[in-house]
Length: 279
Image (cartoon, rainbow, N blue to C red; front, side, top):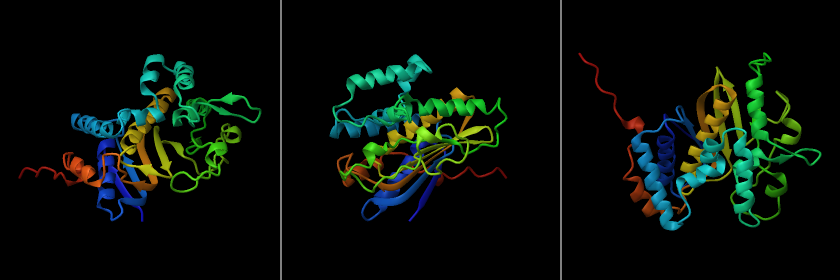
């Protein structure tokens, strides 16, 4: 069953999703869709939620925070320090030194380093920015849906070990599709749309843990969206996250602990009544 939650900000969207999962018998669901209309906006109340979630996560794992998850999608701090394109090399150097043995890396690393047909490496994320920036000067405004970013590696993700919920089949191949404005595969993990001068982003998750990961993931996606829009010369639009399988995991210490924590958070913005008009 599909559930769609449209909210103005990332934190409010996450709260709507996780509260929905809390209400389900088995605390999971398929096709939970969060649509955030102003993904880069955040109130002081939102920031306090992020702090509280990080504190709860640290009680279970001292190294896990909301921003740790965000950084696996987009390393905002490194980008702010080194800019584009400098952050690419610095990030890869950091990952080469600090990545755990036999780890598949991070989503950000997959986005900025792939191998082409000859075995040479290229940067899919940079290619998307170049394509978006070029359409203003090459009169290619008709290409709305030609900016796909696959974060799945067939060599790793189609291995025979069974880990997680579902079996992933990547359909976008950067080695052959990155130069195309049309005709490439329609299904991908991260897709950018140029809609009326704004960059929309849609992300698809095959499995999504709403306590441990989802809030940080949404923040990282919003930062990635802002990066692509800024560097290609556009404004940001809507952020949509589709969790094909969503679960309220035990990242906060179990369902009872999660429920207690959620009770301390702001109410859903859709429940806030507008002030009565003056008579």
